[in-house]
Image (cartoon, rainbow, N blue to C red; front, side):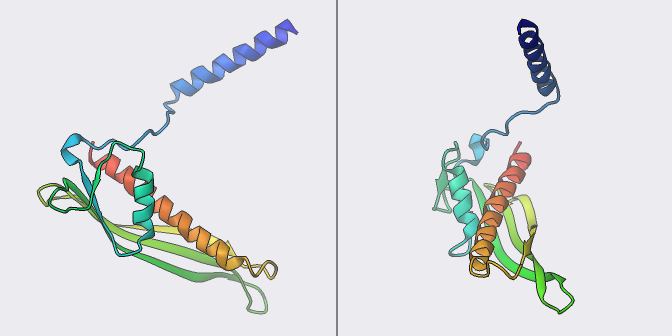
Length: 166
């Protein structure tokens, strides 16, 4: 029993050492230099990405403003588009799967009006199965996928901001 415990503790220590050596670490919060605080988010009315962005920034050190003259950094969400196309059909021509796309165009403007991140487009894609059963829940599932897309888009925009502002 004692030998087994010693071996397990040794393996655990080895795993921890290997993990520390591989460079893995938690991402942490978004770090924006003080020069760029507060930040303004401009988006079309009802923007899901703007809502997700505000939720992601709620617990961070990033101050948000609604006054453009106070903003030291402006994130412009230029457009959000949803689309779908047929990805698979059966022998009878019935759709078996759709490919859902969520496109987000954005740019980041610095304090003097200079671009910090030129206009970029995120294209998020997911396959959505369409079996004959469970027809009632498909629209709800599709809406949930698009909500997940908005959160993923906000997270990717924040990662790009993190890289640009370092």
